[in-house]
Length: 351
Ligand SMILES: Cc1cc2nc3c(=O)[nH]c(=O)nc-3n(C[C@H](O)[C@H](O)[C@H](O)COP(=O)(O)OP(=O)(O)OC[C@H]3O[C@@H](n4cnc5c(N)ncnc54)[C@H](O)[C@@H]3O)c2cc1C
Ligand code: FES
Image 1 (tube, rainbow, N blue to C red):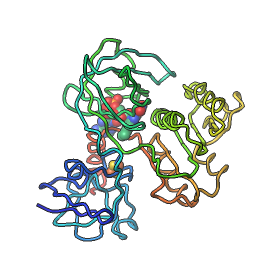
Image 2 (image 1 turned 135 degrees about the horizontal axis):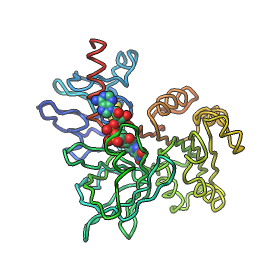
Image 3 (image 1 turned 120 degrees about the vertical axis):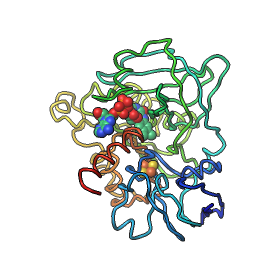
Image 4 (image 1 turned 90 degrees about the vertical axis):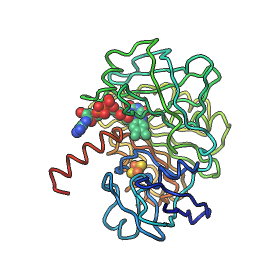
């Protein structure tokens, strides 16, 4: 059985046959970063210091040729070929919270925007769930497939779990939520998941960049820092097509009224909608860079659609943001769908 050594902490764990580094670490109770679990977002990028890995599942499409040449690996896909040593970020704060499967009931359902539904779940009687702000859950479908959604709130005494679900055209689960989900329906979930969580070991100002329903985990993390009474400046940017898609703009504006440490910049990609509303026009990551061309002094949290994450990652790092201070969740489709899409591409391109 191959052994994986983390060079920073010296921790070691074994990987079973065909197990990815991420799966083996999770089994050993060690939290390494991840988001899409499909090999496309790059949030699980680490450096292979010794040994070799293979990619028997999805190809590591999030790695450029140059990153691979510099021994970068994707923890969610890399399977050790023997003993390996890796340099990877550990996120100790999420390690202590057990990951569980829980039955829940829909206690509220409300349209938030033309294609966004707010869903509030509560574990069935007597059960409780714990998580860190910014983490996500998997909804387990009847056939066992998983659908990931960020939790838009921190844990609350009444047990409510808030989700912001965008309707994906042609999407099985989100279409059902949009058209048929009712209060009283039952959903099985697995949680908590993910490593997009507040980092409190810093005094740096924070930038938050959300795209569409990427506002959900950003909301949870900002509310956490507000509750802590932090005096670190928080600059919140939220990008969407039009005003209706900024479905909690009043909440973000209230943050700025209640805290001298927060400012909020809504950004609309539709030029006509921007003109009509008087809001800033353009792409949200461009707005951040126009306001803060040097990002070397910030911690940056970003979540939203894959295209925004990919563009933001590259440009923010080029603007001086150290990669290990860029925290993100990329709202990719679920791992089974990603795998099917990548298999389809491989068939077309003979990869
Ligand atoms: C960490 C994380 C957190 C997330 N948080 C949120 C959130 O808070 N809010 C939110 O709205 N979204 C979130 N997402 C995205 C959300 O998980 C997806 O939108 C959801 O899984 C779509 O499920 P679905 O069953 O409706 O669509 P699916 O049925 O999975 O289909 C998705 C898309 O893929 C296409 N597709 C399906 N199968 C194939 C195939 N074989 N080949 C080609 N195309 C195919 C479909 O036509 C559709 O366009 C998150 C994603 C991740 C990874
Ligand atoms: S590429 Fe591994 S988690 Fe996204």
